[in-house]
Image 1 (spheres, one colour):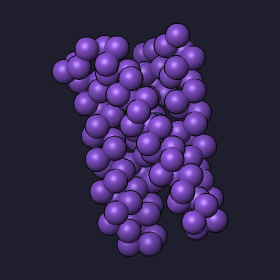
Image 2 (image 1 turned 90 degrees about the vertical axis):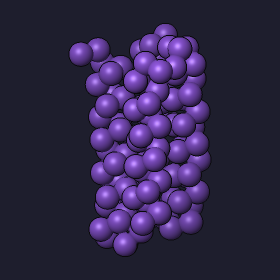
Image 3 (image 1 turned 30 degrees about the vertical axis):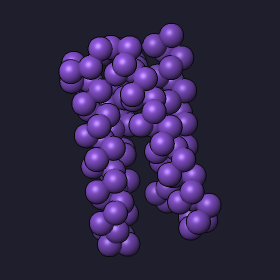
Image 4 (image 1 turned 180 degrees about the vertical axis):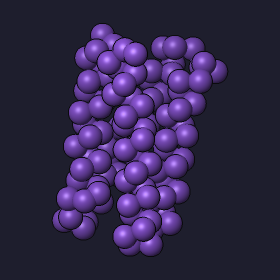
Amino acid sequence: MRLENLIFWTYVILLLAGGLIGFFKAGSKVSLLTSAVAAALLVLTRSGIFEPVLAHKLANVIMAVLLVVFAFRLAKTKKFMPSGLLLALTILALAARNLLDG
């Protein structure tokens, strides 16, 4: 498996895990729904229904939106878990996938 694929799928799994943490710790259905929808959209970018260049750009946009969402959540709650961790993971995943895909 290519490193970029490993990073992508690991990110999707951790995104879902973050939504589950938000749901089980705080009862946040919004966290669960948001993470599930974002993960599903990211998976769709890998499904082959989009042209590869469009899929790559679409995944970047989805991750950029998540980056903003996690930054706002971290600023609002001042709690590192889970929004701060997911913010850091989103930055790393977005940077890595664009550097490795080159």
